[in-house]
Image (cartoon, rainbow, N blue to C red; front, side):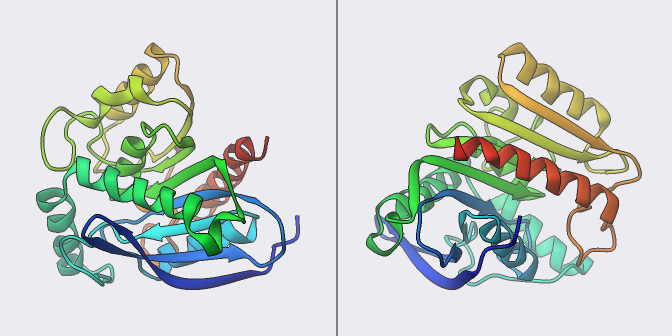
Amino acid sequence: MTDKEIQTNYVKISADDLDIDAYMATPTADGTYPGIVVLQEVFGVNSHIRDVTERIAKLGYVAIAPALFQRLAPGFETGYTPPELEVGRKYAWEQTKASELLSDIQTAIDYLKTQPQIKSKVKPDAIGCIGFCFGGHVAYLAATLPDIKATAAFYGAGIPTRTPGGGSPTITRTSEIPGTIYAFFGLEDASIPAEHVEQIEAELTKYHISHKIFRYHGAGHGFFCDRRASYNPEATADAWEQVKQLFEILRN
């Protein structure tokens, strides 16, 4: 399929007293398209996340990447050095809250469905999400939102053991997932033990959630990101094909 021409821009999406920065990519051709919310790693809405947002739009989706750290550090974007990683981790795991993250994601969804310049291009009943690293964990949470029909969660650590802001682990919300979820893991990922992946798979099966689990030999954490030393092109190529297949659900 030929990539579609797209336009990109930064927008502010508003809810209550909070303005959330977001990066958008939209096909320029007339028509209505499914919407995809792109959920960042701990490094912010950086060049990698913007690139993913654009790649999704070129497939024929309206894609939006909200800044998940807006409440903590507006404009935060960083690189991949150990000190930068530590800053991002502190924001992600010490200061965010699951309820606020879900609220902000819902705000992004509502923006796609109601903003006058955008809503005419978005199929309101065809919304998905994709997330990486911290965003992979958050994507599992976001999959519980009624609007989300398809979720791609990449190497989300800690799903069976914790949730942002504390409380019952995110895995305990598995039964709330109404749509389809694909989860992607590298077998060399030191931050996600194999038993965690098995627990996730068992819970999805237990509650009859439509799902697929992908495990990649030789792939570590962050394997999809070509800015990271852990980038694995073979695993990335296969995972991208699976994501494309998943999001086709939204066109039906």
